[in-house]
Amino acid sequence: MIQPTLIGMLGTNEIIIILVIVLLLFGGRKIPELMRGLGKGVREFNDAKSNVKKEIEESASDVKNSVKE
Image (cartoon, rainbow, N blue to C red; front, side, top):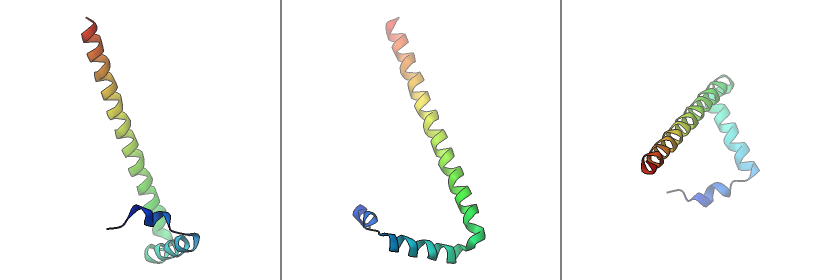
């Protein structure tokens, strides 16, 4: 199992090597598509997170209003 401190130990040289390997594996044309897909996934996750937060806040305000009455 990878320890979280391992990620913090990556230096500039290691990151450059990883990026070169990714470039060689996927090619220059596939990387923008991968990044676009990643961006869409992050955007959908944030939208879902904000929707859940909004529903929880609405439920909490409904409970407060019903308790006051």
